[in-house]
Image 1 (cartoon, rainbow, N blue to C red):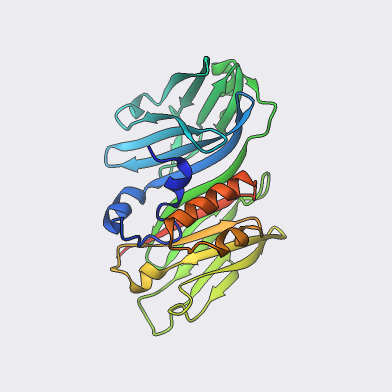
Image 2: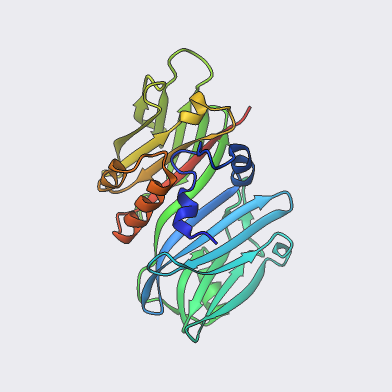
Length: 297
């Protein structure tokens, strides 16, 4: 079992790793969303990742727990064959304590992607405390579990998402706690013209434009969102020079300190990415969004 940070970075900001098959990655990854939260579990910091995915059989959900040193502790899968029940509970024991995972998706609303849009909850409970709760049915979750609200604050620290398009790739993102949700779009047409360019828009406003993309297929730039600096890293090498099956990869990091994390390792080095990702989370550098953009014919 790989640890969560390495899963996040295995193809990150460059998918053309010789040890990976881009075809396999594209088929397996295009319908998945991973959210990672920093929580308190048994009086220690931990990371809990929620993975939503969709395949030909239907929706799937995974919950993975990692300790403060990013070592894997537990994984719970709700496979598509079990998803028809739409609600349930699973538990494990850790250091003589019981950790329970509750979920209710019986009336969940889904769009075209694997992540529910509303009317659901997923909760993690330990020692009678709600360690993590996501979804908009909080009242139902506390009633079902009988848990008390956690004293410490849960924080979404990273999200990995996949989007498919021909020249425009979009998602929605919240770059800070309690901040507004923004409409994020990346536009790039690499098939026409001798000088393709890259445009990033937030709420329809152009915040970044990269010209001469054949020479600048990897790079970084700082933009302002909600009067806050957001560092943008991009790698579209596979779009311009690959076989056409790879993805462009983009990272949006809410801390200026992120540049220091990326100045040493190469963006195309999965080991360097994994190391940077671990360091960024251990130093609480802020929120990261990693977006894989897959081109469709």
